[in-house]
Length: 253
Image (tube, rainbow, N blue to C red):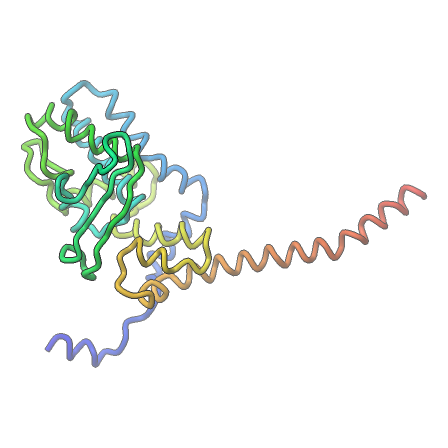
């Protein structure tokens, strides 16, 4: 019945909402983007200065890991909050090397398997949190990446709120966990106009049409900027000989 009513309403509008477009425009500022990418490092250093076993540090370490994961692997929130060490993270090359993050097709919204390589720095932090940081607080190695002081899995809503509030307090911008997915698409398409297939794989979309429909606007703006730069280069080449000739006449005068 619900599906029948949905069909009568016609297709949903393509592209991002105005709110999400406004948010992504803020990240046209390279300083803000750099600050976001550096935020996990800042949080980790701050937590490392706290006394061993500190409850505040325990949460800061988790916030650093959560934001770093969303930057490198923009998962949907239900997948992020449910990450488990033995099930989803695989150090196939050993400690100190990149770690594989694997989600089975049965775990994702679009029934698409996710298999991503995370950088060694993030892998080291995940390893250290499980093997030394968390046990100092909860008394044992956690099974889940995100846990409470009692060692139980941290709730999805609580983790999402912690991520959003941390970014807002540190950077002055409201960025939800889901909006990290839009930001990931923007970052890649800004540098690679037309690179929808990689974005599709990164976000786990079932088909390319979904990706193009959502992010064509980002791609169009980038293409427009590239075209404007090309026109400026042609214009400068056109007038360069005239300026040189004018300069020579001035010297002779």
